[in-house]
Image 1 (cartoon, rainbow, N blue to C red):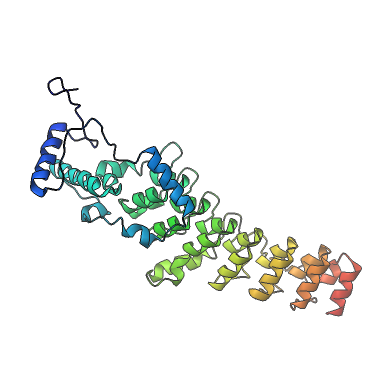
Image 2 (image 1 turned 135 degrees about the vertical axis):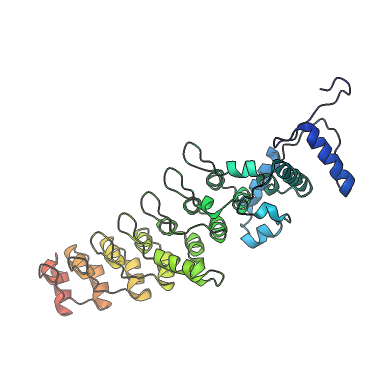
Length: 369
């Protein structure tokens, strides 16, 4: 407390000396006539109180997430310096002036990005903690879409969006794991790399398919059908459809494993190879569906996706060999109805009839030979 005036001395956050701050703020008031700075008994930290945060959180939970265009329309920053992606070399005086302008713009517009755009804060946002997570990672993990948008918008460079934590997860991986399609779109539009693998060799597309999350899948592959993206980006996305993880599985295989018929149909419709072999044994998606005895998925692959009923593994085993050898009568009938050839032999010269485990399967195979 000031003993002479009985008033509390306030020091604005951001590292500005109080004397310079008062001088600059008062001069701004005289020039513009828009803002009056008077002594106060309270100090606003610049962030919402708990009650406001709770209300905002409830709004995000109750309402459908708006598109990125809508959410960013009202968050436009007029100051071109706040949107620069390459920090410029400024003198201390210029930096101080810029920070003051950011403070005042925040006071007028209540847009937190003005505070985050300060150089000393901007650099801290992409420092990694003991787990390798940055502020961007944490905002995604904690499901804070407004904060995520703000941090993405002031990223110093595109490479900052691709920083991975110590589990080799990027912001795009985390957005997919937490099922936030709006964050995925925002990251890709800001320049995030779509096909970085995690510690298991899985891209964001693998993770989305593993969860059967069609909304996230659509956002990840959106550049394929969006004219705003260049040919290089389209090619990267298309190649990602056929990339194998460290277990040898493609995104389509992952979707088959979780019985996500919607995702399987969508991936094939945008160009995924339905007959792609896995990297370990050469099994196709149909082989995996047959081994699981999943009649609905088998029907989807054969009739909706036009999978090859006679696809072979590395040792020339067909899906019919698998079904006959495991005594799956219904699956054998479905494969034969789809045109599977019972005369094909495997690497050891065995036909499906030779490996059949029941008399009824032998009769079905013999009848269709």
